[in-house]
Length: 376
Image (cartoon, rainbow, N blue to C red):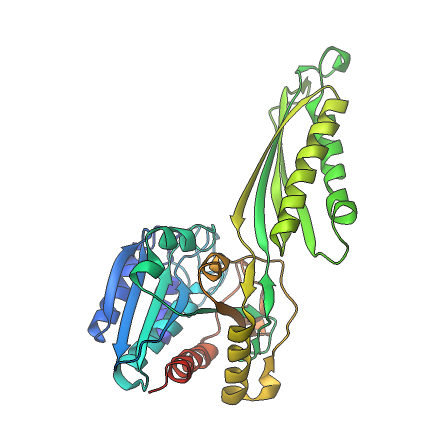
């Protein structure tokens, strides 16, 4: 698994471009006697392993895509692709699931069917939906679906899970403000969209503070403010963009409605026009209570109760695994990546690296999950 992981790290591929990664996975699955299906939702791969006469089935997902980040690490297996790296640990997730699949094929004690899902384009939130639209669960039925994500800052090998919302949705917004361009020395002859935009940016911060229940965790972040202006020209338009995070559909709907009302009202107060595009990229990741409990109990039995947090705080980060959980019961949990050096650096950091020392932990968990949920 370490060799696979380092190879994948050297050759990172972005969402829906994971052709080399998908080919490698499919080849190894077939070599291990596992039925492999390619091209599911683009570059997705699904492995199917059945034993005995059991009617039960379980699905496990790992992501394959990398990020458009230039790596700063200098180790021997650093990325060979300029501007691309596995800065989120998907190389490790893939290697663990592949290792579990091959172990189960040769030594597994279970009855039923295991569905191994190797998903493209998690980072852009499109891969899970693409596989669903390609008939993922109609073609490969599963009673429940599970996934893990490494977590820097959590001690290596520790497990953190919770019932209910564990990761947030991510809503992408773009606000186009149209005024009337003019000379910078004669602002009274135009309508300044920069001033209107600046007021909109400030007003958007009232959404979390005044529009939502204080008990609802949510954040609205403006991350880009673009104009076509130059030093002595007030531009005719401004584009503001960013994202909003929350844990429930009602909160997301409230942010959407408030943003449209606030942006339009502020723009109108300045004599400008406004259009808001609000796009829901990621749904919240909502664990079902039963499956979250399965993760917690199995983790405690394998690694010790002191290694498991069964009610961890939710994160405002996002994962498109939430789309799979809208289709089937299941659970998403964190596996500690460590606290030191590259293993402790934040995800999406150019100096991050997946911790090879947890490969066996993740693989053992997947193997025992299958064997306990599909007993022989």
